[in-house]
Image (cartoon, rainbow, N blue to C red; front, side, top):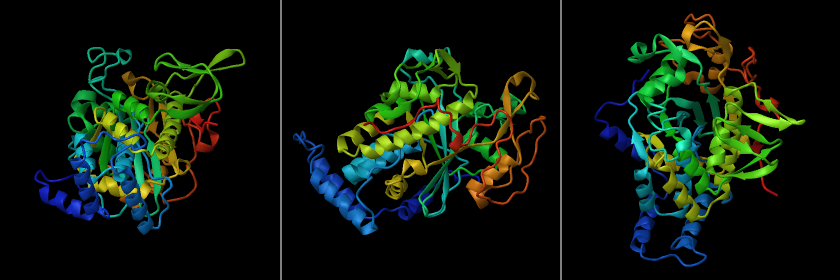
Length: 452
């Protein structure tokens, strides 16, 4: 496996920049300079941005050259406790249309960058994998409802998702790894957390340690990383004007703060959306009393998948420059990306996925089983083979590498992945902890909706 970039990677970044050069970048840069020269203009009524009509005409010409329609100009965005790459991308997609290249560069530079030494360079035009991390760090969080840094120290990956993008077919797949999945610790984590521990503990040492742990256990090389914390999640939703989700029943979660008293298609603000995404103790009201969701983290993953679809739909429907600008302006305090995720690469992805249909999002969960073989770890999950390897092969194919530290099985014994061949048949959902498939979504979970 390629183990990341050399320390002095200036030449590589230069070649990456040339490789990811987008069409008409020069025109966008010139347009950015023109906008910079008109910064004193306050923007007249009905004009979200100076020279907006010219920008829209430019966007239409670019789409025409690509043989695309102008509809669905905005694309995907990211989630917080669930996601996030979409966050940076939805922003950059919109700005590529609504603003000049110079201004786009300014906003991109505001996003916090982290260095991930063990990520693997993306092959030109090929599929790639983004590790999306929902951090439970309280650093920088203004709301006391989540607890202070003194009460909740360090950070854990409350959400771990692997986003597999295939630009050639415009396909997007997500596989969620339950945070209670037991894996083999690597590096300094062995001394800190023992030979085996929950996968979310690896993030306590930072994104690169989690990247190492995932590749060592599952054999999935990581090309890019996006982190989203509570503040970034809320800010992204609020900047888009909220997201619409349908509730068949009143719902609550006293731990996450969820409290939905009405039913039907509802507009959720950032705080409410975060409560949905964080809900592990979800309850719904039916037949005169409150019912408890027995699936815990698996139910939360399903609700997060539904939220991502709602967020994509919201991003695609908000194409005005002011909304786009507010969106990217809100996320830079709560979103981090790896320093190898270049601006031109993001713009290229935005061009490819700007018309992505959220209904085409394929979301799965890594097959696991309950296990009591790990003593003091309590209720945990073990990777379920061969179903887990079948899922990974179906998504990542030949890009998988041989795990150097395979995870323990349900009996607490490390188990190398079995040899399997790709198949279009969904893996069986053995084990009582396995979540329902996409076609068996629980009726009490909220779903994306469009207001009447």
